[in-house]
Length: 412
Image (cartoon, rainbow, N blue to C red):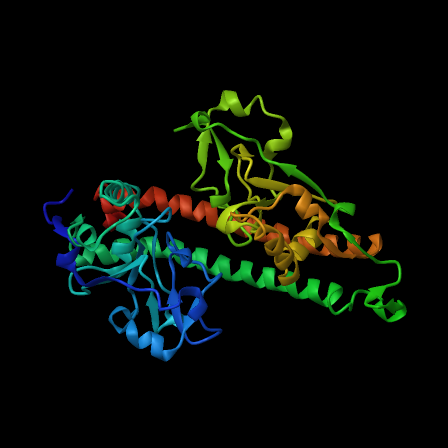
């Protein structure tokens, strides 16, 4: 490391470090529109998740005037299972506020590049230090303002920071462009589903009689008519190790996607003895069956490693998988799932529950045409996701070498 690099604390290189607050009334006070209120569920490493984004009115926002989010502010989750995740909020959501589970870190632009600081905090080295710090206090999995303010970093000159941030942000720009394409493809699939099966404007619909909202030859039936379900395997706590095959848990199932970067491991000699039904292959549809993520679905991305599902994750199988997915992921499908899941003390749904959900079941000919059309769409999405995975892996390989000074930016 160059002699020009120096050890600093976050309070020495920032203009603001502060956490937010939840408006009086909690979720009941949220609005349909207004000022954005960012919660920990929206903050991921390098990413911002829009699902379940909350809004508050001007009166509520004034009470949180001390935590107005500005351009290039870093948001850091400071409590719970998501502690340590951080990102920069998208500009189009500003002005915004944060709740008490998030910390603002506002860089002093004369000392530190905000993007560079984000890369530092998301690096394996500093992320590990943050996670360790969160477990050493009196409160489990929590970071205090003092923890963050006194957190030490090695910082190169601003010119070097700018170069490193530019190199790494090129990867993130490509990832963002791919995500935009994925979003457009997903929207096309959703709109096509609604056009065919909600508004009933399917191919040749003009020549089909409709009685009580059901086209001739179609029926309303439980989806078990076209769907089967596989429950995951009940691994024991002592099965999990630092290395081995990866296990998909509910924490890995996001908004229509599967996170394969943060999976737990089980020794190969355990997973290799399992029935193949527990193994997950590219393009297979998984669903979270318990907890806060209950009902979330995602297609397994492309990867050469072996993956298995635990008992809180289910695999949905169907000859018409894209129709089943779009139905279950629609407002109506999610409402069915939530109604069933909320009947228990903890949100929970079984394979039988899912298969018992009733849907409009189209004629086989229509299902075949739809599935064939959607297959190309979702293959494109899987390919874009794989590109993003490769970009993230390359970025994450470069990241520790660049921030440690082992790789000279002038040679790149």
